[in-house]
Length: 314
Image 1: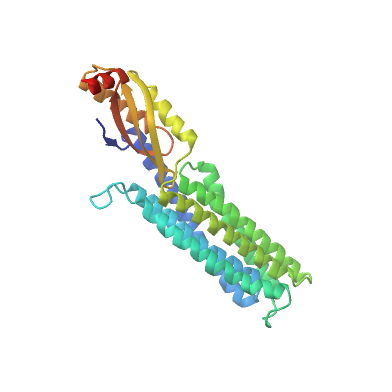
Image 2: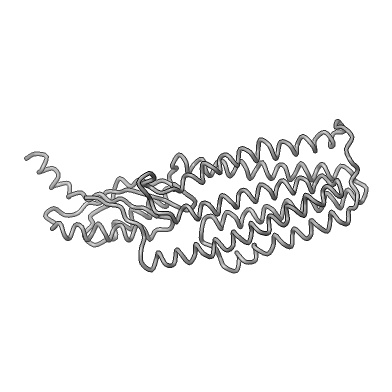
């Protein structure tokens, strides 16, 4: 006896409300990122401060990442269909793998190619940075704008994995902007190597984020285990149902941001009426789906070992 069940009722309503809040936060981040990207890129052409170009590329990568996170939330809300019977969540992970590869192989490497030759005095002649006040102004402006969604998320205390990932990315953005600000100020004070150093630091941050994004989504594509704590929580939730003798053969995998599906076996007493066994099965699924991150649960009901042994002999 087995079946599959999705959360429903009040839990689903609460999940929908959280989804709406996370979507608002991510949309605000996306809009601000576009404004910040255009401001940085425009001021870079006006000032030739390389750290601004690095930050513009960093922000462009953020725009793409936020787009994938928005798709993740949208796709996770879609019900399975005939062609995608377990949902659509893995599609955004595949796209994120491609994006992460592009970030590392093009954006960060290109910035290294621009900054390292200047740092070691091996590069071709480049435009001399100018209008530092404008460059510093746009960096400070970007830091203030990036702080707005951080404050919103901290006040809302996001629980969704996509929103949490975006909150971490916003903190990384502030670190990158701080490096660009210090590099620009130091360049203005007469330390020209500060600009390529700041650019290399931002390139390293982009590469680090890209590699992290690749690793995270690769695990989702191959279906990595959520870890022993989640597996233990699933088994304990199932075993706590009255009439369940034990829960065993628990298997689970991550298949999307903050999404886990599992299957498990429960043992019940021999001679249990089919109606009672079905009731226990439903209650097991309900309790398991209350574990954080669980979205799908498949339960197999087994008779007690003594009953299985007698059936095998007979």
